[in-house]
Length: 343
Image 1 (cartoon, rainbow, N blue to C red):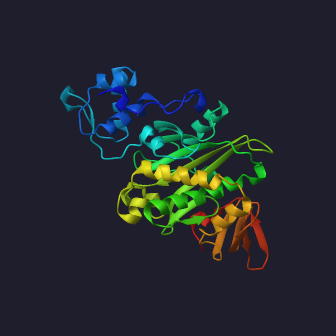
Image 2 (spheres, rainbow, N blue to C red):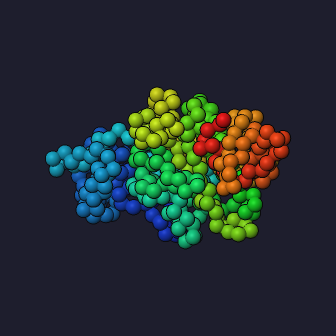
Image 3 (cartoon, rainbow, N blue to C red):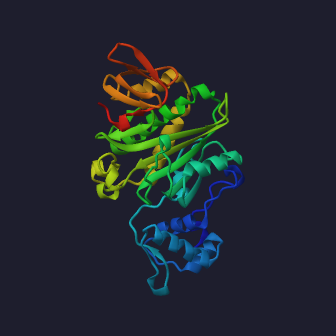
């Protein structure tokens, strides 16, 4: 096993705000690239410039997360689990973007990719840096909800964005991201997701993906962290009982597994293409072209109570325009579409 056959860092620590892909994930990459052979821990350690004990600890962490790793009676280590592994070098080689995703920092397990991306951005990480985790222990959704993020079956990642943008126009990042993810899913699967205001993708009335945008800055955005979760290869019984009637995955819908690296690359390319022109009218029209909720009755749960009516349009400030039974059009800037359900 030689070092050049293994994934190496794709960006300097300084450009990612001092954060680097830890040994545990680098070991997973190495095992993912050499499934057919048993590789001795000292060989992996030499290739990754770490200690054999670090390799063994990494294997222990993988096993705790449910990965099957054999030790082949001391002859070597092999990843038995069929889960595809996102290898950073493979991602970057075929990516084709100018900035988004070209500096990936990957973790075996994190509390939240958004939290790490925010710390990295505050430390100076470059525009386009992506923070990805195989498993999130405390993945965050909107309105303080948790995002179920099990290992090896989904895409849980956050992007650092440094666009010249006022806070009042930052809604374009969330709606634009939904458009881009819908484009990526359709390009990868042939299936067209339903985009729902303000930040979700649905298939068959069940949630497929979510977006959480967090900003730093007052009048102008210093940086944004765009958190994205996509359910990719879960089976229905992989979801907790409380989510089995409301969540879905690409595998649930199509009956087949998908290469997560290829889907991630498609998503990053689509995001960069949408954000190439942060024009409010363009993003609004693209979003409206993918939103089946327009023209249908909705119930929006807001801090001031429910807003019921027909979803008519999205305003120039990203607000959902809802016409009530009294004929009055109300602007909803923040809320939840009836827990995701149209009425």
